Image (cartoon, rainbow, N blue to C red; front, top):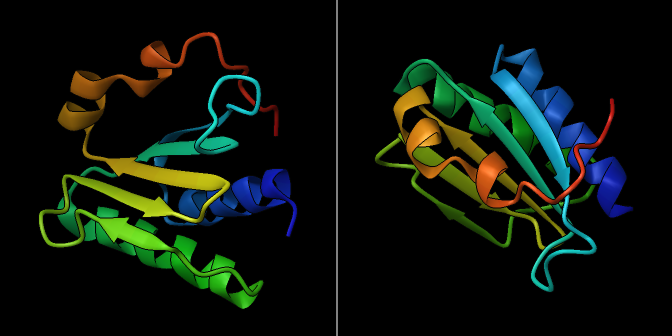
Length: 112
């Protein structure tokens, strides 16, 4: 599956579980590691887990599996690595602290 389509599918899945402030960053010209970041927030650990599961299910239904997942137990910042797309799901405090949108501020936001 094309990376952009995968990122948009992940964003839609996150939003289906009411993830807050979902942003897709196009890193193709800015990172040799991945093409897109999908960033969203959940208000608590239960919601973050539901968002994570929705993203995994949506991408698995399209034949994509995460190569790696971090933060499943802690539930304050979950990272799902699909290779050319990396999904970050934060609780609001962690998202404000790491502020990936500012860190990658020169990367364009994908319009959806």
